[in-house]
Length: 317
Image (cartoon, rainbow, N blue to C red; front, top):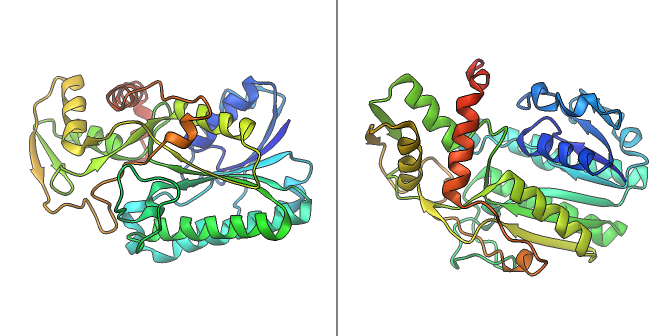
């Protein structure tokens, strides 16, 4: 099989590249390296079945030709800077929604009709039902990121209906694991490296979150696309549990043998658009035979150990 991957040098994208190559597939990846790391592709670039294209999806006019001949497109490229969405509102529209439209149009022109899309649990806004199932209604959107991903889902399903595409939409919780380079574990560890006596915590620390390890995430995606054959396939990806931010801090502090004084900024949100509780129903994906192997605690510790061993990730910070 030949796959085209957008955002191939990012956290999820580079792990997916390695997995697909290990299974003998041909992979073409595109990334502008604005947030991805070329070092994440070191192993892939030694493989003759991998082609890396260093281009910006927003700028390139060659996308239909680049995609042509692929069996499917994994569209993972996005602005994932959720916290600062209100500081640059156009980013989510331009880098998420408009780029997704460009990818879909390029696929249509290239006659490639299978897309796998990384969405988010944020599309549910502040859900009323927990764990939140795939068929839950979308309430008022609470973040520009979630709104942009919801718009992307609408475009993808419309292309599935209008142009006979086959689409797989995966609504992720936050992902942890090897090559993780932004998010709460990264932020907490960075702060503790600078001052291990005190830790600023955005919000009140009682926000409840679910996390999924990258290995479990990729396992779930590949199982779903191999077993489900509907025109439109939508899956939540998460775990059977959640934890408070305070729990996460305790796991990190224990691993580092620290007892920092916690300084809360207050409120039940860490930032504008933050959801105090995210917990997705994963029964649909589990029915295909998938189960997460990592607990949240194990995922956090594995991520922290990776950061400890890869201090170069903080060189540009």
